[in-house]
Image (cartoon, rainbow, N blue to C red; front, top):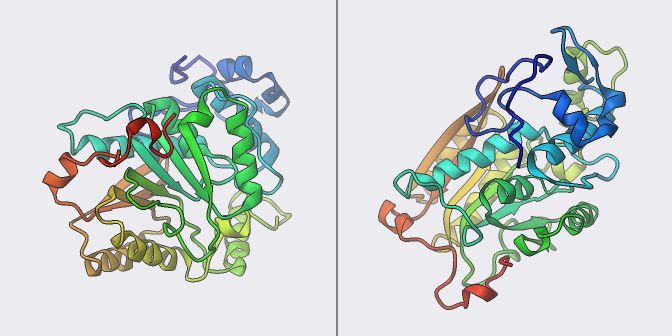
Amino acid sequence: MPDPTGRSPVSPPAKPGLHPRNRHAGGYDFQNLLKASPELAPFVSRAKHGGPSIDFADPEAVKALNRALLAEAYGIRAWDLPPGYLCPPIPGRADYVHHLADLLASDADGAIPRGPAIRVLDVGVGASAIYPLIGQREYGWSFVGSEVDGTALASAERILAANPGLTGAITLRRQQDRNAIFTGIVEAGERFELTLCNPPFHGSMHAVREASGQKWRKLGRETPRPLRNFGGQGTELWCEGGEVGFLRRMITESAGLRDQVRWFTALVSSSASLPAVHRSLRQAEARDIRTVPMAQGQKQSRFVAWSFLEAGGRRTFRSLPTLLDPTKAPGLP
């Protein structure tokens, strides 16, 4: 698979702070992107830095760039989204995956576990299925993706069906209870090395609109848009209690799966949420709690990881339940 981090003379500036294994850390190589996805061409123009770029306030341009990045870097074809659904920034999503690989390596003397025996649960896989796509292509992991939104789930299914080999490596499950996170998804005796999640971080649709307005003002646009330029449905952007409320529910449910998951993780959008999240984790008696910083240029991000297993238990943990035939374990090809 080609490595898109090699920069041509017309590449835009690199993105400082990205993980060293991130294929996008050297900036976007538009020459290779256009070869991989010629339909990107109408959206490319010369930017202030002198090289090619796109208008990141144009949702169609962002989607075309994502399609090119996924094709060029990961060999993903026919990637698309229903109108209005969250269009994720690929470099930041890839960073989360690479830091998760490092988290697993911390229990394995620095060696990153690879291959389909490493089972990962993506809570809220979304219409883009972005984390399973990147994680499977980079590390060969197997994924279960849960989703409460039927339209998003159907979109993810179409993407998997269009790419040979993915349907065997990535399993999708519908979450029937909109108030549940792990309940109804994780089966009895089922084990995962990791769970990951990009929680909805607003507490109401009003807060979403306020954040959208601020974003458009920063972009210098006179005409406000109803939602963020990357799109997003209600369940993707907000929930009652915001991200702290969501993460508290996730932590409560995770305590009931303490022996079935090596590491639980979730992105935390606001650093102001961290004290409440850590307090909930201590109350749940998590054995190991970590906050892992990430960055993309000037944008600072982070995820919280927690485990109910001691270090020794994590080192000997295996995704595959001992009572199951590994060839029949959920989510494996």
